[in-house]
Amino acid sequence: MCRTVCFVVFILFTLTIQAQPTNQSDSTQNNAILRQRIQVVTLTASVVDKKNNPITGLKRDEFEVFEDNIKQNIEFFTDIDMPASIGIIFDASASMEAKLSKAKEALKTFIETSHPEDEFFVVAFNRQAKLLTDFTDGDEILRKMATIKPEGSTALYDAVYLGLEKLKEARHNKRVLIVISDGQDNCSRYKLGELTRHIKENDSIIYAFSIAEVQGGNCGQLCQMYSRRTMEEVTEVTGGKAFFPLTLDDLETATSLIALEIRRQYSIGYVPTNPERSGQWRKISVRVLPQTKHKTRAQKVIARTKDGYFSLP
Image (cartoon, rainbow, N blue to C red):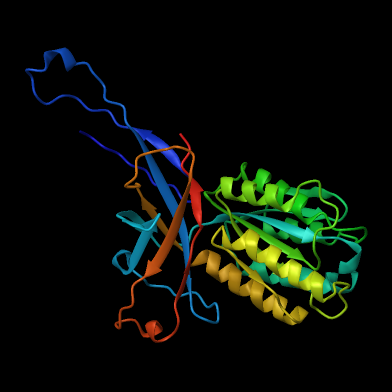
């Protein structure tokens, strides 16, 4: 049997295996083709220390992958710095007015730290989510950002939903959403449950920067708690992370760290030991083995990847 398995970052797909009988006595099967659908699961894993600094230089045998608590055989592994397709979901509601300049500076730092071949688009949102610019380079993104004038309310869920749809047109296999907002959703058409389901059905990493707690915001304590929980829910399922900077300078530091993290991630591929594809949710976890040969192991090592996937037929 001749088997070819191609691993592509952030994509679940199936391959066809063709096999010719080796026993010549099976003459009735000389022209038969055995077609077996193999589902390849590809993961993007971030490994960071407790300060969220990326940990690089890890090898294949230092990782373990589990699907529904069953260890999987890693068949593909790389830590190559690959370009990404990145959607920027930017809050243009009225409450952002005092924070707009610093938020744009943070975004500029993020773009300048990113891979030179990355492509970007921007979805700006207030009472509605709108594609501000299609896929383009970082310089054009920054020019378009200068046209944003904050007004209106906050359709955050609609904007993230639109960003996920736009990423389906991406040129690169690594797909990321960067969300910058200072408040909770208050006028989206989509509900949080609908958005969460859509996130699980996609293969994109989401990072969110909630600046609701920055001085000058109009979000009270209960609002802040709800905003935190929402941001954590929509990011952690993807292997991303939510950040809650207390100052606008902290926002710039956080976006810079994430730009570096995206460039220093590990790509891992495996064929699930469970061949059934009933549409059920499969839980995934990644573990980095504790080995004393790495100095970084003296620190807390955090490995993040998407929570799982639907085993669709």
